[in-house]
Length: 545
Ligand code: G1P
Ligand code: ZN
Image (cartoon, rainbow, N blue to C red; front, side, top):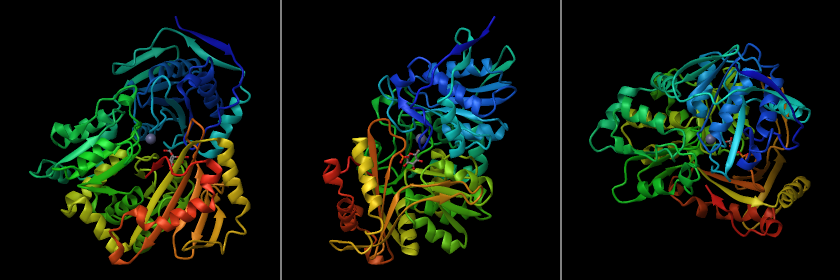
């Protein structure tokens, strides 16, 4: 007979959630009581679990199984009415969001460190999503953190492993543990949103070829069901679609650096027509055409501009939103459509209220995240299906669609330079020094660039009035264009400085330049203004996207 144990514990000082939940190296999560303290703090924050139903799942990375067992045992010990678990402990982030919404749950726990590498020395993460299906807003994550500083006991069940490998229900004490199919509900939702007939015609047409790179992460089984079983594409379109606990040793971040093999295929001889990838937990996406890369900032703008071609969005969009550092390409489309475009801080949680209040339909971030009001997370496969739907309806290839878009709305040249694993003191000092100079920067000239204005971005949520500050330093230049500096809130090692650089042009003769070359003078100004080399010792970024 299972017994509820009350375990005495002491707080850890380092459990403050970042941009997207609590992320730490695996050995940190393996410390005695570490995961348990955080999970109990979540339960305490939401007023206990008594009589509640939650879902739990993860991206299958190293330590997923152990964490799932712990969370199930703690949920039962805390008196949950029901806990739903993805079979094998797997659930993509957007699928979890959908499950919470579809079944009207009290929340969900997602185990993932998204696109960060996995393995015994890799990263692990845990995130709580609220009943709207979205990541807990700042006031909830702050409350969880406060709780972690006070916690002195937690409850857990004294019981053997619970089998989560077969579908069905198990009753333990007052709790039903239900193992669910992680794929079906989500794929049914996709089928309702998109024109599967048109996409199937495209994918089975002679001459059209696509490759989907699952990066050995959670989306493999979803992609198999969608592309092969339902849309009848050839099996050969699935690349790295078997989930592995260490993601095959890779870095499951779909960008030009970490999805190199896919990029090489799309830029090689006999390249397929369409290439796409998703990240560790399935919320990010990268879109490629033959010898062509679509920047995420352009992608969200193009989805908005073409949304009327897609079943679920054919009646128009309520509004759109982008995170502040995302390029302003989306603003041009919103202006043209006569709808609002909101500018939010970095992180999906800031879109939640706007989506819930029906202010926006589509939103996105420059960091390979795109989504809509169908769930409350960004959604990789959703974005990929959206693109296929547009290609099928317009009968044009990726490059043609993007270039036409630029001719109509102008092109926003864009690049992000990341300086990873910096000494945190030096990184903070760099940001502080910029902040101190905010008043004096306007008028400063560096090479061809003169600063027009600058600020430290703050945001007041238009729905609940909550306010956040210090969300990134923005510098606007006289010759149009802007640079944004901020420190990452998702890293687990050192600090990462992100520098976002953007310049729009409406000159049709300037649409086919290399972004690094087109932006060279802004890139130089960005690094000089912040004294990046002097302050960090780095002469170039570690990753450019
Ligand atoms: C990064 C991205 C951000 C995204 C988050 C979670 O956060 O920049 O847009 O929402 O990952 O995927 P950061 O490390 O910059 O705080
Ligand atoms: Zn992710």
